[in-house]
Image (cartoon, rainbow, N blue to C red):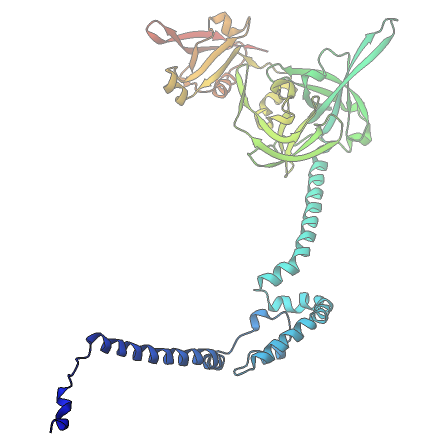
Length: 457
């Protein structure tokens, strides 16, 4: 009886709660490992084949010029990757043969393939590069031809002016010194050629000789000079010029003058480098600066054309119009080493008077412009500030002095030296004008009128 119920004596032990969770975690880790292995096998062996079947590889981007039939066989769906590698190795082995074929067909590519593949930037650049170089050379030749054509139309009006000075040496032997500068034939009147040049070449000389563009030489006579700008006019009688020369030379067309613009292409003709028959091309670099002279002011044309210290000549535009006249002694820009000129358009009036040997109205003022901006900053009245007056000039005799500011001539306002010059030229030597001047006093600037009798020079 007792043995039959011995099991009742055994005690039932309760299972620990954390064992249950450990068992479940182990089962989850096992099944996760199995799932990862399956996914890895699918990614390695199955996915690449599916990708090649759905998205066939396009090989047209690496085409090096093969035929369209070869391109059509590349990258078909379901192709063997090992076969593609073998084909690529074969293409590499045959690259030298392909390159040779491409070179042999180069002319065909330029004539037939280029129009069809006009939008291809690589093909366009490779084919057009030699064409650009050829076009550039042709353009340079054309530019040079255009320059020489313009120069030829103007050179027939250019001369070389030679000033001859006689002197004696220690043995009382007479010898000659010669100076030469360029000149410009500006008119043919009264059976004579009138030539504009710089006064320094004909100053205090015994004889003046002129060499024309064809090499013939004739003697010239002094006519008149403009002391303000250092220019002079000489004349050569037509009877002293050989007939063959008269048929080749011609005065410059005075109406064909323009005001140069900054950046404009210009030609220097004459002897800017110090020797005859020179032509140089360059660009106008500045036109805004002013050079004050007696009773006037002129713009200065700066260029990037190199000149020598004794250089002379003219500037013309690409249409053959006269732009400027060199005046190195006046502008004193020899240290700059670049060609500087007075605008020809601002000299025409003076040139006409020089040719006609007319006196120019003279006041004797040397000054500078007082602009609105300067007036507001300094308190000086707007007008022409008098820096100095010439000795024995009408201005000095009247009582005008340095520090005065000229504001009016009669009822006309004066704001610049150029406007002063323009109003003065409306009078003749001997005329009386009323000049209104602002003069500083203890109470500030006061207006003072002056009666001035202008003279001629």
